[in-house]
Length: 256
Image (spheres, rainbow, N blue to C red):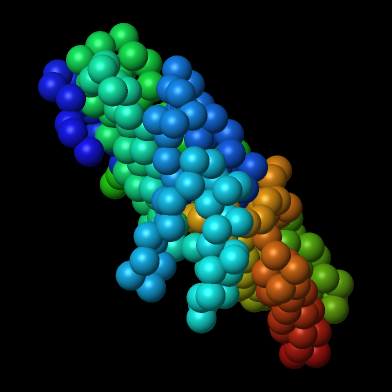
């Protein structure tokens, strides 16, 4: 493809979650102002490149091809839109790893406008794209509040339980300080550590980048984005943490 002179803008986005709905919308945004004959979508598999005018047509072509790999296994897509007059051209290379966009042309308004629209689309919460070099993470405020609140609440619950089963001859304050403090703090840390670990895993898994042109991705919060197996695993971690705390609490009560 001939590169038009003038402005050349390029961006790279990572952690994008692109299913059929998101890709259709993205290509619609990128195709604005172009004629259908000026737009092409392609996919390379087993050293052969399949090309069509729309994503739906491309999926049909790939599905009908005699391929040894599963039809749903897409690791790359390429979108191109070229204005013959050289005012604007768009190239997007998409994979689960990153989305690379290049907008070139001689018309500054069209070039900057197209680059901004595509970049904002990829950064939308429903897609989750981040600039190259940025890292996703769970909300720190939520994590710290959960950890501190859980620690304080569980500390006092465990402490009171140990006092109730402890020596009756000492005052409650003395019992709390001398006997129940260390085990209560230890159990609280075990529980909070397990909860933070489970929350971190759920958060990171929900942000996992995806390129899936043949299926729709679940939308919404991070819990709704997880698959059935991942949900079961997260619940299992929480249940296991509660079980460990209960076991240690029972053992501590017997000791005291």
